[in-house]
Image (cartoon, rainbow, N blue to C red; front, side, top):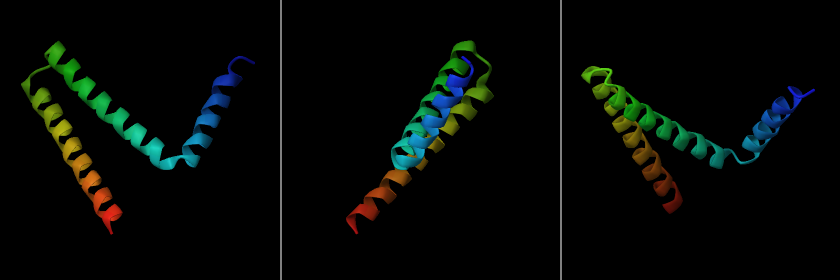
Length: 80
């Protein structure tokens, strides 16, 4: 009976995501960025090697460029 409740709450979360798509997409996008940057810090902390650090830094830079492009596109749509 106890294992039923987590599935229930997951269902409720899914329903909530469909109702507030834009907010939830934004939330997951920011969570992804946080996890990506957290992973970069973890790699730096454990010292996996320079190539991995460069790769992660590149990924974070690409994410930031994509975010800037999305923000600019959103502003352009709002101005029209």
